[in-house]
Each structure stands twice: as C-alpha cells, then as structure tokens.
Image (tube, rainbow, N blue to C red):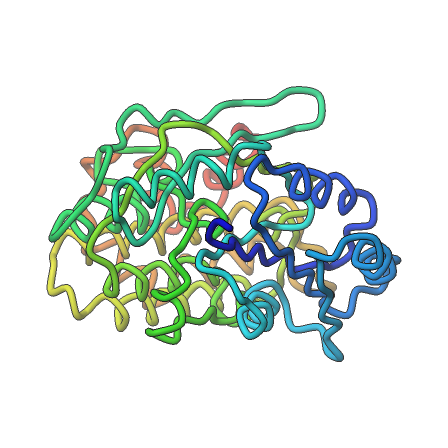
Length: 341
C-alpha cells in the first residue's frame, strides 16, 4: 500500500462542471487516494451529484455544510476529515492531469521536501494556454523560500507587469499532511480579505524547510467568466484595504524591504481591479462611477502607498495607470480602462 493522498474539493453551484472534475480525480494513475467533497450548501444539484458519486465509489466521501461560508472555510471543513499522508486541494470547476498525484508524490518522496509546486494550464473552453515555468528553480530551501518563492507570490517586482510570477492558489501544491496538521494551518475567508490563499501561503512558508518543483502544467484552471475578480463587488475596495493591512501584519515577521514593497504592489493590483470594476460594472443608483473613483483616488491608504512606491520604475502602462490614480485624473482613468478592454 502506498501513502494516501487526500483530495479536498469544495463544491458550490458547479453542476455543469462537477462530473468532469471528479472523473479526472478517480482516473488518477496513483491509486491510493481519498476524495472529500465538501458541499458548501449549494443551491443547485451539486450536493445530490456528490452523494451519487459517493454511492458508487468507496474512496469518495461527502460533507454537507449547513451554512454557505465560501471557498476558504469549505476547505477548512475538508481538512477536518483528511486521513491521508498528503493533501491536495482541487476546485470543483477545474480538472487535473491523470498523472498529477503520481508525479507529485514521487517528487516529494525523492526530494524529501514538504510541499511540491506544479504548473497549470488555463482552459478557456475554446482554447488552452500553458504557464511558463522556465524561471522556477528545481528546489527552494532556507532563506530562498522567503526571498524567492514567497516574494514572487506576493506581488511583482518593480519592473514587472502582468501577474505575480509564482501563483498563490492553494491548488498549485501537494502538501505533506503533517505540515498542515502539526501547525494547524487554516484558510481565512475570502469574503473578508478577498484572497484566502495568499495568507495560507504566508503561514505555510514559515513551517517548511524545502519546496520541490515540477516543471510541468498538471492542473487545468477553467475560466468560465464567473470568478471572484470578474464579478462586481460593492465592498471590494474596503476589502482590499483590509487585505493590505493584514498583509503588512502577517509579513512583518520577515523584516524585509523587498517583501514590504511586494505587499504594496499586491495592494496596487487589487486597486487596479477596483477601478476597472467601478468603470465597467457599477450600477448603484445615485452613485456614478466618477464619484466612486474620486473616493478611491483620494483615499488615504491609496495616496500613502502610491507616494511610497517607485512608480517611475514600472512598465509604461501600469505607470500611467497608477500616476493617474495618484493625481485623480478620473477621465483619463476611464479611457485607460476602456482601452484595456
């Protein structure tokens, strides 16, 4: 008998995608797995579908939550039921390569690492894109776990655009279960802080001594147009500020100017999303996008971060954007957002 992999799958409103997800898990070439489906009080048929899968497969169990609490807390519920030596998180509208578990377990076993990081493909329905993993080292140990692995997760360097180079999502990693259990690692709520994964990663890296990497894209992230960053959220800006404050608190232990700068960039990334959403989606009666944008641009935290950050080192497009926010050029901001599409 090999070591057991516990796969936690939070389930909510995914009746269109759930079968595909579970089929990719039961089809793993690594046989020693258990699948824990956490029904987060889904209003569609997802919960019943979970029960049907469990009836036909001894390795599948279902936990039905009485209250919908979101992705992060659903994962915590799953953690209470794991029996395995390794833990994998999979989102229920995604799917994985059949060799993911085998390759990740083998990599952890031969390296002695605490976690194994792997890449992903993005499935848009009509085409699939690959992640570039060429910059990743084979392993990260000692201080490099913070200075290289974590820092590139928090935010971009000053001269970089696009997304942070190392993804923060919890599903990008196979974890040794003992690391999570012995350190009582749990997720916060994305409803309070926008992102449950980033704070989990910050706690995680303080508990490990080695990260192993697989330079393959083994996970399929499916873009269906309904992600948390594409839906309008009235309180997103306030949540972004809460997230930034918590980021500063959680990373203070590292006493690193580079980490502080990356946290500023993380806040700026969320700021950009807030501005774009106000331009594109705001339909609140009596409040125009222009008024909301003026409130955001004049906010004390925004002005403080943008005054501190070396905007001149940014690539051209983000530099124009953040300088427009700093100076309150609302009309130009709207133009930039519309040009970006």
